[in-house]
Length: 272
Image (cartoon, rainbow, N blue to C red; front, side):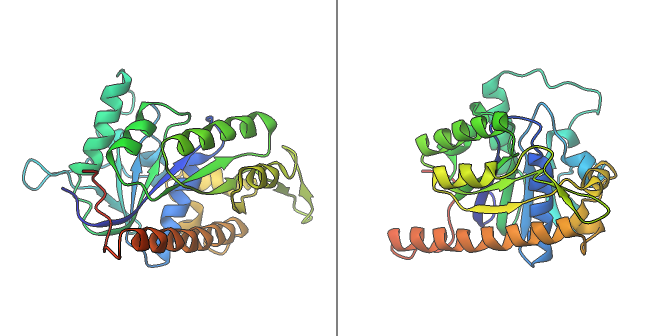
């Protein structure tokens, strides 16, 4: 049984390539910078990216042969299949095995007491998403998209999936929203306004719009996310704004849930 975890947050997208892992990584670090006890679980078993983005190569240990100790970096507790296998090793598993591994990462990792356990989900609406919904009391999810029509079409499907399994969608983050040139002018490489329109149509809050900034990619590739390496950058400020808005939304959800449960304390994340 893990320690007390106040909020379980799923960072999700309808399709790959929208920067979901970048958003999950930088949001988790921002929460840690804000003083929140935070863990980040890489639930993308086929394409784990957290070890690369944090530059951490050590393997998780165990003090008793049963509980797994998470990797710790920049004040975060981390777990990923990428820590358990060799870099060139492929995970050739069927859906139920993947879902079982994610469940084990929640139950058998020594997370301790956390304010946030953030999941970097695989793209789509598959077994891992459904298993998390069935087995754990998830506080809410955040959808990540880009302004392109093809990405927005898939985010509607992701929203429909979360509605079906009764997981609140807390808000929408639009990544790659615009490019700021050296002269300060903004260029809409992938269109403009798509995320805002989608959020309005789905009844969601647009938590923020992250620009296309080469340093975001460079920092992730070099193992030190931008909010850690360049906290004064424009993108880092955007991530702080998103984190604060998300924090406020989660507190609202917690208050509503506490009232519904007659003021029960911390969430027991394991379903009965």
